[in-house]
Image (cartoon, rainbow, N blue to C red; front, side, top):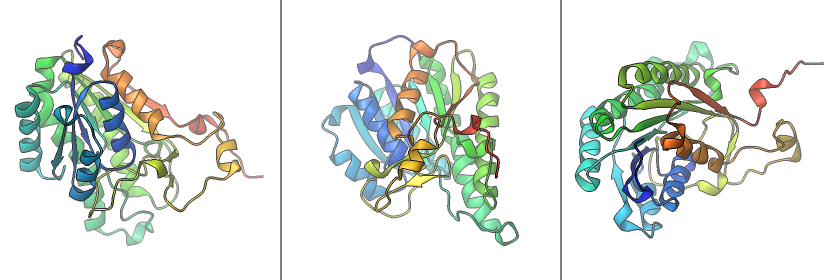
Length: 272
C-alpha cells in the first residue's frame, strides 16, 4: 500500500458481518481507515453498520461473492463512494456442509464451498485489481491451517483453502509490483465475542482453522494449554496481522502465507 494517511486509506473486507471479518472491519476503522464491509447476510451487516459511529468512513454492501455481476457492482460502489481502493481482505467463506463422509459429499455441497471460498476470492480480487494497481495497494486472503493439515471428511473446505494459498502466490506474481498479495492461515480462533446479529446465510469465515468456539461454548484450560502460545486465538490476532500486511511496513512482503495458530501446526503430536 502506498504511503498516505490512515484517513485516506480504503479497504474492502468481505465476510464482514461476523467473526474475523467483523473484527477486521472495526479494527481498521479504529485505526482511522475507511472500510467497505461486504456480506451476504444483510441483517447482520446492517447491525454492524448500525454500531459504527463513523458513518462517513464506513459503508455496508450486501452482495454474494459467488455472483460476478454483484462483485463487479460492489467494487464499483466502493470506488464511487470513496474514490479508491487501497486494500482488500478476502475473508468471506463457508464451512457448510461441514464434516461429511467423503463418499457422501455431493457435488452441490462441494461446489458451494469451492465457489464461495475460492472463486469468491478470485472474483473480488479480479474486480478490485484495477483500483489496487492505481493505488499501489495490497490484498490479504484469509486461508486456513486446514490448507496445510486435515482431519477426516473435510475435503471441500481443505481443498478450497489450499486453493486460496496457491491463488495467493499466483496473484502476487501477476499483480506485482503494483499490488502485493499475501495470505493468513488462522488456527483455532474464538469468535464468540464477535458474532453479529443473525440474518440469513452468511459467507463469514467463522471456522478459519477448522475450530470454533461460539455462543454457549466455553473454552477449557486444556484448550488454551495445548497451544505453544498458551491460549486459543482471538479475531484480533488476525486483524492486527492483516492491518500490518496492508500497511507500508510490509512493503517487501508478497506471495507469503502467515500461519497464525499459536504454534499448533509446529507441534509434534503422537498417540501414546
